[in-house]
Amino acid sequence: MTEKTNPGAAACHYEQLASILERKIRSGELPPGSRLPGEMLLAQERGVGSSTVRRALDILRERELVVTVRARGSFVVEELPDA
Image (cartoon, rainbow, N blue to C red):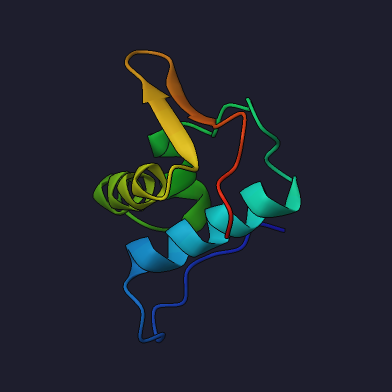
């Protein structure tokens, strides 16, 4: 089942989505080198807008968990930083 953001939660949707994706990355569900689903697909699956997905990806890039390659997508980094 796809984990959706909680509209009643105190954290912003993009922060919730970033946390969901970080959990999947750190647990190995999204292994190093794997490509994340595209923005539109993530938005649809999670029930959020594409701008929410972009902000969540910004957070993951700041945390050095993903890299984005223009016209290719976002990928989990090969070596994860400490939590």
